[in-house]
Length: 115
Length: 115
Image 1: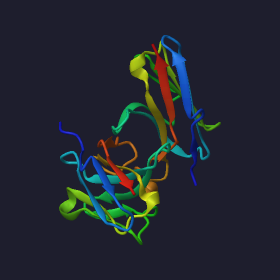
Image 2 (image 1 turned 60 degrees about the horizontal axis):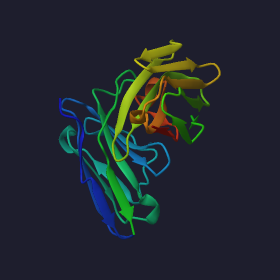
Image 3 (image 1 turned 90 degrees about the vertical axis):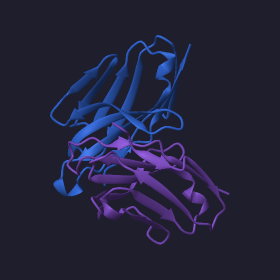
């Protein structure tokens, strides 16, 4: 089966610019996650969708980050305006459902560098 | 709030030596614990998943133990090879249904196996 697809792989922007990332989950996976992984740290959950509804966005900096999952399939994560501390790898993951026994499958991530 | 710690942050061993990676967590109310491998520029690959009722899980050269009461897990990799060089992350899932499938990650241990 095809894995989780993310694009772009790399993005370099200047601070205060905006940027968007795209994620296509594994077919049939109802739950989608966005993680932020700062260099040298473990991934931190930003937002979790169940179909097209938000389950958990408690760690999403809502003043600058937004995410949507229209039609319950693909998702986009946007940052506007970007700050230097947003430099990180943004990982997307998906699972069949939101139950604790269902494994998450990860994409290769988008590496964002802020100048 | 659950906190997951991995020590050491980096480890270098000669080929053939056994690897011992440590993970500790503050809240013992976990559903399961999972070990991941991350290669540079890649997403996360699941290695082993231990349910809270289990003491250990094995796959090939990998063995993971779990002591929930003391909040510790250890990943053993026998007879290390240069191909084992990667970052190893542990993550825990909460037991409470409301938290869903949320993963809390440690900071990872970066492993280098020298030929």
